[in-house]
Image (tube, rainbow, N blue to C red; front, side, top):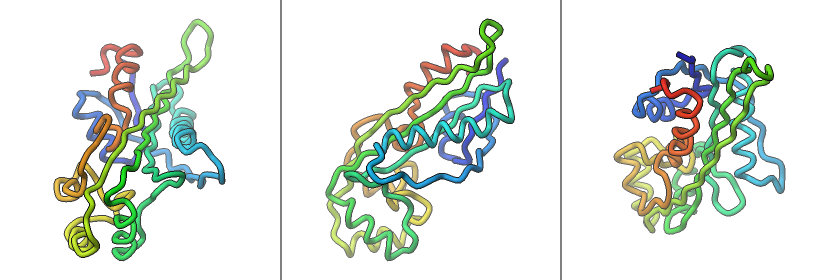
Length: 198
């Protein structure tokens, strides 16, 4: 059976793969993630980071199938990261509430060299979902922030956390994409590569 490696430290991504029945090792890439340059196509930037993570681990494990992944919350033309304080979380959610933002998740799969051409195969997958948060006023946002763990999540909320998910009004797209993996597309590719993976 081929060894799969998830080149990510994300427990949410690992949970998605485990729930889908995959057997894999989790080895973080530990790369420095550069900031996007001005004018960068942000979905492309997410894909580039997924590739960097995958290659960082694939160079150390050339016989394994390596999956690198990255996810970004995008509002307009900017990426929204994790807040740096509770006050920052309140301001961040104030910007997001009552509006729709998009979440782009990308995966880069690096397949070991085959006997035919001796080259590794590289597959890129990306998916985007749209999320609308409830139109809450500042006092309610402040109460929400005090009851959840907003500093741990980009956008100061997380759909996989029951308390935090209360702020989400609607998701258009794959829930797994919002959590951190383009799961539906990834499943199709992995089953083609190795039907014994699950």
